[in-house]
Length: 194
Image (cartoon, rainbow, N blue to C red; front, side, top):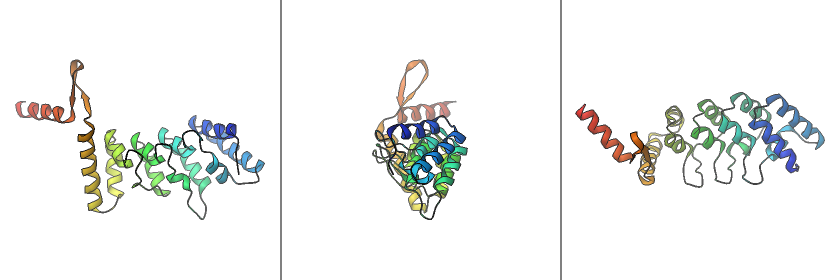
């Protein structure tokens, strides 16, 4: 089945603006017009410019209720490829949900078959994106469900190494910036002196 660019745009737009009922009705209409299923319509609705899907937009924006409905639409004997679909930056919906700290969306995605060990084009796991963004609850949950202690240790070491390699700057008072190491040294000095 092939959808027009306008039909794909409409599916993605209705997702972004969280118009659940209108989106579900539109998926059914497109399925009927194309002698197909709402699942096939949803799986075909991929932005040709950047590879984003309705699942990506639900994940990025924390649209729990809409995501639940779309996951119901995708249920079948075979898991849908949309759950782990990579966009042009190789980010899966789980990368976006983790980065934006949408814990409930992360849970829905993992329960639907999202693979937390997929790396994006920067070589990062979803858990690393969450850690970089300071989404501690997402990091803790992903570590909890993530696998063996060895895997957890590897992710924690990778995340720590990544922060050092990227020389992240932290905004301090009065416009000065420090690297993570310099900021940590200042915090340590403050706690020792204070």
